Image (cartoon, one colour):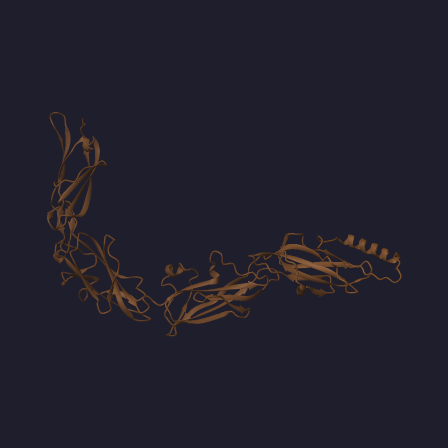
Length: 493
């Protein structure tokens, strides 16, 4: 195969004239007959290895030194492949428009071959060719014109979540009951000049492969019996073989939805007309946010209920956390709707319970109730109501004072007395002072002597007094603090 023969028009005309002169002067030899093959040339074709729009028009021509060209065979191959015998196309014309494949992902190499044929059927043994890349400027686009579900009760619910994140960001999100029918319709288009959509590819996330439909196949419906997170995707394919761009998860091609509602769970109030709460000691009603007095035999209990909109509840899972941590959820049978726990320590508690449906789906928003154990210490003038009878607040009257003392020898110190009240024991068990950023040690007394070595300075001083109580077993309970400022108007040696 010889190199490309792409000739300008004036060269073609000169070649025609020369061949005519040669033909007129040639003498035929008696008893001898020969037929020279025709020559083929390409005109107005892309520069070799260049990029062109996938809808391209090509031109060609041919000359026969001892006769005339009556037609041509041409072939187009992908990449650098040679044409198979069955792929050649016969024509008597000298031009044609091609819509080439450009889908890798938006361009693809092609080689165009052409060979002239003379009046005796002799073909050019070395066809002319040119290699170039066909490029699809715009991939086809698609959008949903309908996306909705019809519930078993006949209600219509729009499906709008274009990303998986929108399932949780949306309120209430695209969740539909089991056995709902999902319905989708779409339209596609191609923005390339003269381009058009040839077919669609679509798929429900549970299907193994995409379905293929013609240009009129623009709807899909299915009944979804099983609970799960689903997606439906549709892509358009244009006349260049390119598909809709899905890089980055284009929202126009996808819809996400969840099948099977979460079951609902609630905390049963401890008495008629009471707000959400629980029981202390099995009989004393408490409401969310209450602080319970710390005791060695402290017990709390909870009751709950729930239901499922599109199925039925088969059981429950529950957990109790302290300061955000604790055991994982524990499964409970359907008939068990209460739970009691004892030996609570000082801390912040939260009880969670969630229903589980027949699809083994737990309530995504568990019912919960917060409460506190061990009323924290409090300082002079502060109030506490630690499950106090009748809602009466207790006020701490223990003094909190500090006095600057200057001795005869010139030594200056601050005499601090700041006791904290404690509902359970009367007075907090331990204290610590932080003076101007200098942290002291924990001590059993509310009295402290603050010196220059402990951070005392002339002028404005900032002091934080911390107090903490202890649990019945002697371990540390809850810690509180109060911050105050005082002024020292004497020089501290």
